[in-house]
Length: 188
Image (cartoon, rainbow, N blue to C red; front, side, top):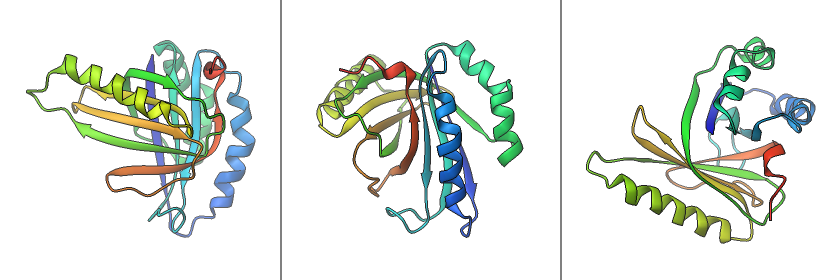
């Protein structure tokens, strides 16, 4: 598996209705994409849910690395480049994915943690699994996953939730505009 995110920072006066329209139109085109576990079309809107700026992002989890490669080098991604310019794409190695009971995705939270050089990496992996088990036990959790940025030795945790975005110190919070989730169809 491979996880990706790219974010487009938008001007403070950007009409976010255009982003919502884009997600409504483009989102369903991803609903049956092979090898895609999910793609979350997300946004933060200045002065809504504690956001201080406008941003539009896409968060992906792919079953196969080759599918992610084909996205970045294919025509679907050219549409992104033509619309917003070529973004910096964060790329991570998935450590753990857990599926919760909630069905509707309204928000996603992202939290980062530096991995100390002296960290017990085996214990760290088990702690991520345990943390995700706890997160998906909450009734509003759609999914929780952890990834590793091996370039910067950071853990990045995500929680996809049925709750609205909530500002929280040390976490980015986004509103989910559309969730294409062909690989989550086996949710319990």
